[in-house]
Length: 287
Image (cartoon, rainbow, N blue to C red; front, side, top):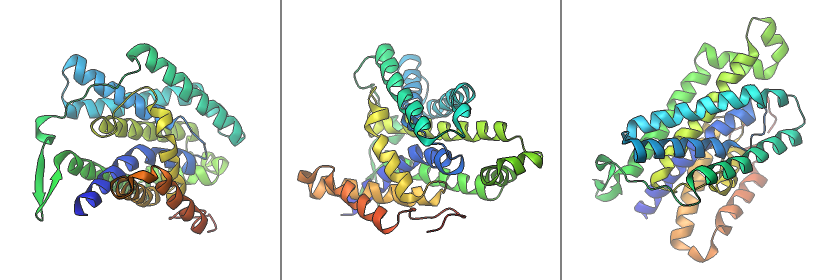
């Protein structure tokens, strides 16, 4: 039981790392970005190529994945996304889901349809004993990364001038611009941050989920579940929802493998019925 719980928490941390950027763009920037998984995939491929073809270390590959996805997000925000910030949500959905299929075709063309090879560095292989229970070092590393990102985001968005400007721009762009805030530049930075976090999660998923061109579409539902159940525009909400999704999914596969994905979807439906605005409701939203 302890091993299943630990693996579920580690899986949940990975989902949080990949999905929290979507919570930022959907909740804080009011943009329905279904292409979020494509940025995670881009980061994963960047890390895989650097490690497999150029011998780059795992730590540097993770940093490169974050930077590559953030830069890709900045370019697409400047070229495409900013033109639809005030558009109908259906227009946003059509643009972003179109980018998903374009990215799948592009990555299939360049890298082929097969899984990317990946070998964990020696210091992340094997297990360590915690309270008499053997736990994987890599999963322990995922938990540490998730907690570090959670703390950094809570500090950045809740205790800094940057976070205050983001909240002001979301509440009223015109008033925020009138106070001297460069709203477009702020949104560019925020969108890039969300994409960079997705890329970091995509790189970390190499050792757990594997990476192939269908990744962006395959895990899209999980990203949406985490954000919708947790509460878009919050950080602690998706964190709690990701842990819930991870534990239920791993426990279901371990104890009730015959149910497939039914268990996780059933639990999420119940959660949405009980808390339609999410586990954590952003200020200004009536629960």
